[in-house]
Length: 353
Ligand code: 13P
Image (cartoon, rainbow, N blue to C red):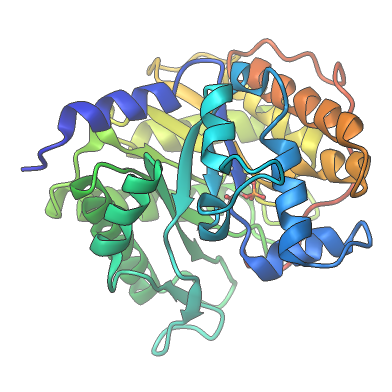
């Protein structure tokens, strides 16, 4: 039995507060490098500090954002003014979290595009240290893919579901709320119905593995991809169908004890990510738990473009606009187009985080 159940439940409920969501800023060093390159900045520690320091001093951000997922470097980093990044988040009322997986590796014995997620070795020691540093929740990104020639394979589903459950249990022993993230990439030309079938199977396996490992569901969160058509499908489902199918999938497969479902944006544009979420929160569903967001690209694209490495005011304003849009979308109150957004395509084939 996990000792810290009360604390885990309380943290999970705070993260899943209605009208709030998560800011995913845990890009690995190579991935944040790509973002910085997009605005002609070098991928130095100083520039990463400047960027994340700008995000974490956006006044009022805690009104829309309950938690921020950090990369390890950021958890131990100071703002340029000498205060820790953790203290900056605390001041905004935002709970710091930490990405604890160590990235994807090819899954030998499965299909060539399939992966497993490493990082279990030494995880118990690392999570204890992260907790001491102020982190209260964690993320582990497992990735699955749909192809016309057999993906996801049984092996990939079994391995990734088990890894997520082991990770979740280990985090809870240290007092960190695990975000369970079985992402299904949008790559491919499959229909939304195929995504739904595959996602039902994956979520069922994930929660079976969680049960076998004694994961305390009330002290955990789910971070799924939305149930969408493949990026290359010629007849892509629109927001109504995405919302209905996603809600149906979640209600069929996610135990009611899980307090929040925090969707990733997965390559959707900023505006689509908000509109799809808003539609989910505007239609009838049986559960009342939070359907919210844990967006990376869909919260940062226009912010990066506005910031350009030196315009803090413009960067923070753009971040606040998308944070507010997604906060409103989490309660079904977002009016499409009422906040500025970037029109950039954020989809990248075979996305690595
Ligand atoms: P995107 O919203 O950019 O998909 O990223 C969220 C995330 O944290 C993926 O693990």
